[in-house]
Length: 346
Image (cartoon, rainbow, N blue to C red):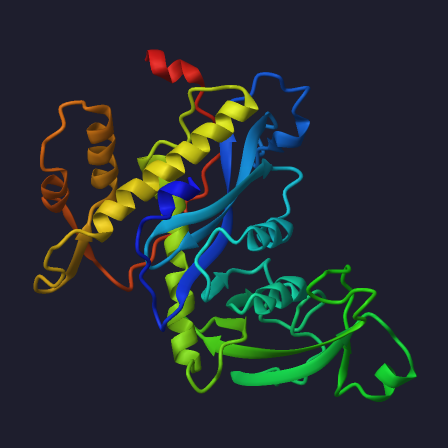
């Protein structure tokens, strides 16, 4: 997987590699149920309590080049997205000088300190309220309206007379030891963070935490950057349903993991081809892009040598999709269902 990604050039935006991290559940058929309880997930359907069995796949996705850079596969019931993200940051199987964009759930001082330690940037969404468990609780920010505040604090787990007497300098946090943040050798860590509260067109507020400079990245630019993050959600839909990730040929855990890695290689193969297609994007009312569902099918036929046309790129260009901005649809939350290997004989 890593060797496949190495030869291809990388596009950048603002001289940064725009990466996103997120995770998704992959439902798999499992036979030895009693031996694999950590993979069990009880279905949310009230009428059915039969468990589904899932892997949790955390990925680092290149939003500009549209390919997966790294992934970590683990059982669903024991997964921890923040811990896995820290592991993938240590492996460094992604282009450096990067900007990591993440949704809620990744707002962690440990991750932010680790990203800054490597010389990279982050743009992470946090809870927009000031309630219990919110990261912006305790900061001197206005409760109403928008703001763009850069604060510098000395973070510590220690509580003494000095920290109590200087609340404008010290901020006490409850966190575990980390080689990149608070530990026994460094009980006091100074860190600068930028908190930005923005308002969406529908009136909803979003709080973004970043270390990007305010003079080069105003709130409107941060809003556009965070909107690009949705590409990783689209990639999950494509790889699951268009690339048939949910239809497995194996039952053993090692072989199921092998099929997940194979599908990600296949997805990267297809997006690399579509990224280098030459075509006229602006065609009147809309701009156009390749139909990824059709492209995945064409590339699959090409690799299988099954009635494959010689000009694969030409056939991909025959089916283009208009880009209609501003559309929104209600999210379809379906049941967690697994496709068993009997589908091969259907």
